[in-house]
Image 1 (spheres, rainbow, N blue to C red):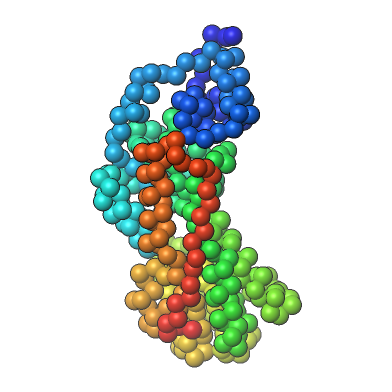
Image 2 (image 1 turned 45 degrees about the vertical axis):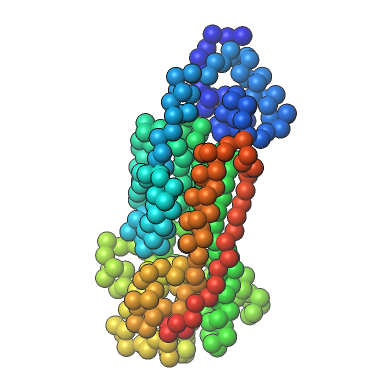
Amino acid sequence: MTDKNISIREIAKLSGVSISTVSRVINNSGSYSQKTAKKVMDVVNEYDYHANSIAKGLRQKRTNSIGIIVPNLGNSFFSNLVELIENQLANQNYSTIICDTSNNQVKERKSIDMLNARLVDGIIVISGRTKFQSESLNYSVPLVYIDREAQNDTDYYFIGSDHYKGAALATNKLISAHTKPFLFKNEKEYPSIKERIKGYVDTYKKEFNTFDADRILVVPKRASLQEERAIIRSRLRGIFSRYSAPIGIFATNDSLAVNIILAARDINVNVPKDLKVIGFDDAPIAQYSVPELTTIHQDVQTIAKIACTKLIEQVTKPKAVKRPQKIIVDVSLIERGSA
């Protein structure tokens, strides 16, 4: 044995398992294999680890607070989802601490530090361009991921929409309208967006037996929607100079789709006669567009409900919880006036 002090995080790294798994083995709670238990206990015994009873006592006294990590509250889909989660948790007498990271890893790290200090009972992690650094947490905390994976943790709850299916539905709808659809996307790609792109490309190839990468057009994010719209106008002019109407466009999110409709109006292109546009999310903005936006509906009510239920189960009944779980929520095409 050695006198070296060692943390749960270091035990997890040395034994090759997640922090949450180490915690379950040490506290004899939840499910894990004998092989996993041996790996953890070998490290525990080698370093003569003793759980910090004070910290453990603090964790057993619940704070009835839940952290929510979200990449961008300015996105209407994310803000709607967070509001639904807040309401669900409030009904169960949990308060929430919302951390908007602005897609910035430094801000996310600071948010994690803050949630560590608050000793929240659980964390819901929503989306993000990179895998979540769960090992950054100083204690084992129940986690639920919505459209995001963990870096060094295979033992977690994942909830997400069927993004591939949604993209296929949108692409097939545009193909049935006698178009060879283009895809418009912003330059930042979440894993969910990559799935949408794959669904679009595969569906296009299946129909036309070929695919030209030039059919995917990037719209860089700018300081204002007006600047973004100017870029879209340029993209649309280029398309209409080379191809005959009608043109089909699948946009990877509703905000981008609505801006495409506005840009089309700027250059006197009629939607849906000459340009057919389909978005993704069915965010509130979809119904305020003129014409109203045809889009892929994500069932945020169900996603929020499942996320809260699974998190509270981990908090209140850790021994009964079975991990890991991957739950994919179905999507549907909402037909309105833009396609």
